[in-house]
Length: 107
Length: 123
Image 1 (cartoon, rainbow over the protein chains, first blue to last red):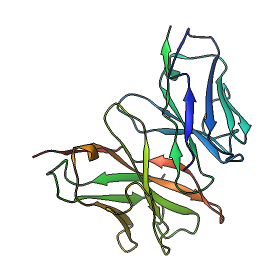
Image 2: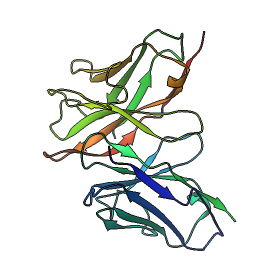
Image 3: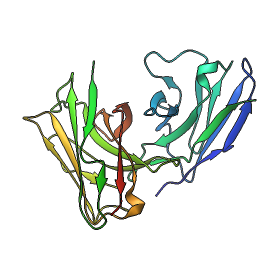
């Protein structure tokens, strides 16, 4: 099983500032990685797939990068609606696994 | 626009079977382009993939749950279902159904997700 490790667990950022979230896979997943955003009381929403492709309707301030075992989600200028929990997920082989999440909170 | 809606009991007794159904509207569950998945999230915790199914193929299950899980599809009703046997308090979670993209080699990302349904295991 591929273990996905996200860091930090919590990220405190001021509105308008840049946020950088990390996701590490215990073995290579190539570019088979997705990012999701989850707000309280809501289902996760797809942000990024293929490690760097934004999903339909996702603002350009969200960007993904990386391949192999190291991945990054960057939010270039945090808006109030971006404070949420972010999860990475690989889809390279079975079983599919998620990272433990990074909570982005207001500083 | 595709919508997925989970339904089923919100309370299940320990040792019994949890049964949920996901109704798909706005698209055919018989599409060649998608798998259909179940994912769960214990309160305040992270996400766990339970399993998925193609409309005409074998289901795939998380090894940690494989001995207790069955996922099936009913194309006539445009629904797919989850059965989880011998539940314990550890199975208390929000259960989500989701569409999973498939481009022919391996199932990919989940989009969209249903709103989720909380299932509590308690006597």
